[in-house]
Length: 258
Image (cartoon, rainbow, N blue to C red):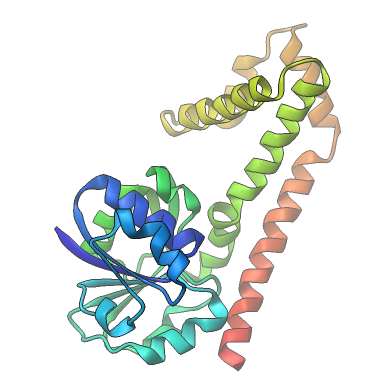
């Protein structure tokens, strides 16, 4: 059992706690100043507290707070060099965090699918430890990347779920507009996204080949794909990812200038 503390029990922190709890491999301490946030994760935690000094007794301390309050949190905790501090803060570099702690600092960009143990995460390859790899394995899949690529990873897997929800909702709404019940369209669209994603993860085939495999000549899919190919849908998605990545870089500058 690994002792893990999570400081910040908002959406991301609570998702991580629930995912790690489901794995059954960890002793979990939840820390937040908001009693309602603690109440929401109490059932999944070994203990809850509003005292950061209690949270810092764990081997791994996860800081899952907004970038604007990272510095204040770091100043309130004292970790030793044999502990690990995992930062979830978008745009906050390991170099910035290392100014405030003796612990090993590992930067991770997670996403909310940690709750269902299907998270996609990016982690800094230069500092990741086996202990952190095990934690990430317990809640999904991860890639190890150079920290210079963390802004784009933030956009792809951190912001990405919102982009997917947007597209999923558009597909479901199209089904409703053509006569499906809302719950039917939601289920069909969501399961289709889930199945398509799982298929991609289980094969090395290029995605364009997978599209071709669904498109029968003169069939229904090719008619729909012709609309997408002739549209600017791919450009819109690229622009969304770019905007999110640029904002991540801006957050880094803001953190350094405060």
